[in-house]
Image (cartoon, rainbow, N blue to C red):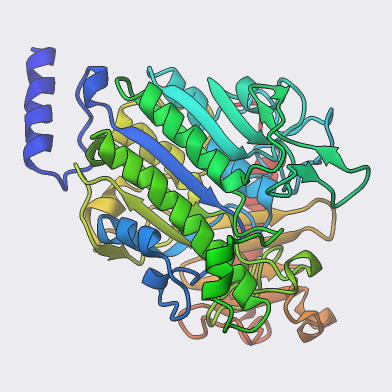
Length: 458
């Protein structure tokens, strides 16, 4: 009887491609493949499908045409390591033991091994699991990808590398950082973007007969901005640093297209969930020539918890089941992908506290409400840590930073209240005008923080 019920559900799901909440059928052949493309330092509006008028991104755009584009998707943090921890565990980065960046020094541990990643969840469900690109969540054998649920790993363990020498050289001593399954490998002079494409396509080919999860943490358009010659020439008319940044975005988009093309050639595209999302907002660091990304009207950037630091481009496409060419305006966070993928694949959720919520109802309907009544961000440690509580359209920031305009914040702005419905630019601090809201959200912040600090391994 149980088997008959499952068959009925399967038949119903196949006949109703927008019924995303249905439990997948038994059998590996029916489980969707999963490809997460986590871009790095990509600005809020930096794709043509997000309204950019001077970027060429046909492959990101074709994902939007074949899937769902979010307008209010948030990163788990405004910094690299923390955002990745939130994505992979479905938990607040601070709860997952990664409140900020992890060291790029070999021998330094990162995310605690007791955390359960998407890779571990799907591996237990019969999936092959691969990491390609950036890791930045630990530099010891047990905290590198093969110790955190990945069958295969190819890429760099630190925050960034030169795309030709594969050296990390932002802090001395200069050190080589290219690895395969926990061992140094050398590919001097080979363009890292092409190496990542080759690795993704190799895994797709080898695993085409079984369900797979590939986490392609593409370290672009993060510095160094090393776009290919054709794209640098294409954007030569743009001022610096936008031209350099744009060339790198389009070089990234082109390589995303090569992997999508290979998925199609193998006949896997229709049953593959493809998620593309930035880890946080664009950088204005000296290493990226002071900027280049486009947050549109939003304040802040990478390292800031204003909207420009955490509101990111995000698209999900699964031709077999999800609507195509639609937009979702509901609040969502990258922490939500773990429970969402659990529901879409039938994998069992980890037995621990999750801060993410399944987005399946949101994917099914543009009129469904966000699964989050409120959400919390916490970046850094100690009394100067930045934090945000979001409830409805109200957003309370503690110790905010605006790296694009640091002089714009004064001592009176240590507690900063914004209403995103009234002013999405967060230009005015409303704290003095609405003390009752400040009190309510401050109490909620204390509740969130106490919960994090009192979290057991589960």
